[in-house]
Length: 88
Image 1 (tube, rainbow, N blue to C red):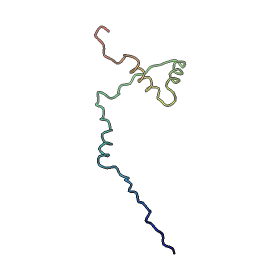
Image 2 (cartoon, rainbow, N blue to C red):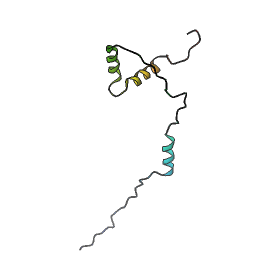
Image 3 (cartoon, rainbow, N blue to C red):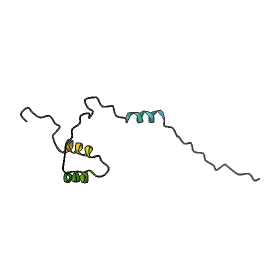
């Protein structure tokens, strides 16, 4: 058997586990749990025509649930959920 020269071999040290500082950064990214007042817990229902349903499905796409799409649309495009004065 011939001898092999391993002088040119360079061994790299790879870190597989994160350091303690990286672990702290990972923990900071988690959001705080919502309070009972902030959770969506109330349910309302509406009836719409098949034509209106087809329009909403077209706007929402295939991946977004229809209820989520409608709720997001109402929250962002209207002022339905904002408090107003007593006369309005």
